[in-house]
Length: 95
Image (cartoon, rainbow, N blue to C red; front, side, top):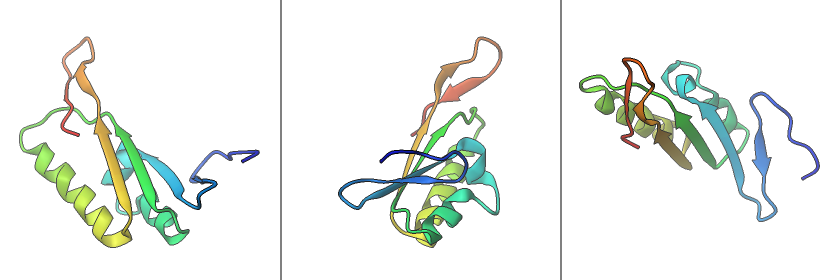
C-alpha cells in the first residue's frame, strides 16, 4: 500500500482482508462510522476506547458492540483504556 488517506477510511491488506477503525465516541452515535465502513466491505473494525467508569455502563458498551456486529457482520475489536487520568476519572478496562 502506497498511501493511507485520513478520515473514514480503511486498509486493504495483501491477503484481501479489510481493516478499519473508529474512535470511542463513534460507537455511541446513531450514524456510527462502522456502518459506512461495513457497507464498503470492511471486515474487521477496531475501537480503541477511552470510556470512563460508570455503574452498569459495561452492559451498555456490550450491547453497542453486539448490535454493531449483528448489523454489520465481521469482527468488532474493542479495547478500553485502564487506570486513572491523574484527576477524578477512572477507566475500568473492560475490553
